[in-house]
Image (cartoon, rainbow, N blue to C red; front, side):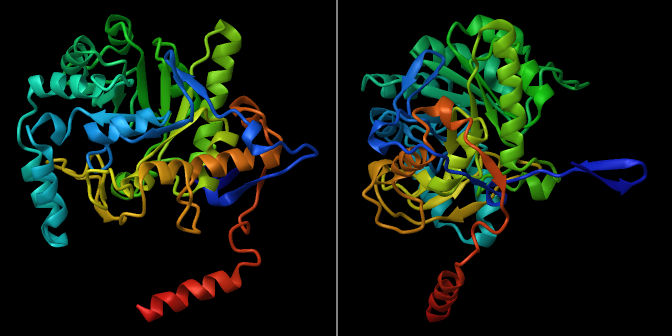
Length: 388
C-alpha cells in the first residue's frame, strides 16, 4: 500500500525482518527429513549459506573450512588478500588501531596496489584443497581480474557493488558490459547488488547465474546512512524473487537469488528464504568464527574508500567455530549459532520439505513479534548492561 507524502508523490510501505513472522500450518515435518540444498551455477551446496566477501570474514583458510562444510565462502579480490603476500599482517594493523584512527588506517592499508599474481595464488591455494572456489570484485576491476581468477581455477565469479545495473552512464570511464562479461567468462557469474523487480529482471537477462539482493543492510555497512538509499530486506527479496519467477516461467531458466546482509539470527535467515530467497549471504555471524581472519572484528567492503567511506569497523567478538555457528551445538541463546539447525527446525515446524516449499510459507506483518511477552528478557538484558 502506498501512502501520499505530498507534492503529488506516494511512498510505498516496505518491510524488514523484524516486521514479519512466519505462520505454521497443518503439517509438521521431522527437521532431519528437510532438504536445505540448493544449486548455484552448477555448484551443489548442501546448505544455502554464503560467507560475505569481506576481509574480516573470508581468507583462504576460512574459505576452505566453510566450503568443506557444504556452504560457500567468497574471497574479496579487491581486498588485502590480493594486495599483501601476508594479509594477516595488514589485519593486525586494522584491528589494533584506535577507533578515531580507523578510517585513516584503513585508507592507508588499502592504498597498496592489487597484484595480479596474488589473485591467481589465492585461487590456487583454495583449489588445492579440492573445494569450490568463489571470488568477488567490483565492476571496475571485473574485466581484468575475472580472466585471471578463471584461468587459475575459480569455479564461480561474483561482481559486486553497492548498486549494480545493466545500464550505467559515465563521462569519465567505460562501463563494464555485463552481457559480454558474463558470456566471455565461461564460468558462472553472480551479480549484485540490487533491490527492485526491474533491475533484477534486467540483470538476469544478461545470463547471470545468480543475483545478490540487498543495499546497505549489513552490520558493518553505512551506505544507508551515508547515501540514504536501500530497501528493507523482506520487501527487496519478495520483489526480486518475483522477477526470478517471471523469468523462469518465460524461459525455463531458473536463476537463484541470494539475500545479502541484514541477517544476524537463524530467524532472520528463515524469513529471508520464506520471502523467496534461494540462499543467504551473511557477514557478521561468520566474523564471530574462530577461523575468521578479523579476530572478532568486522568491516564493510567500502570502509577504506578513499573519498567516501561507506562502512565501519565493528567489534563482534569470537563466539565459536564455523561448524558451531552453522551446525551447533549452540553455546549462545540468541540465535546466532546453529543457523542450519534453526533453518531445518523452522522448515519442519512450517511443513516445508525443501527450500522451494519454504519460499511459499505464509508470512504475516507482525511488528510485535519480537517484543510480545518478552518483558522479562528485555529487563534481564538491561540488568546485565548495568552490571557491566
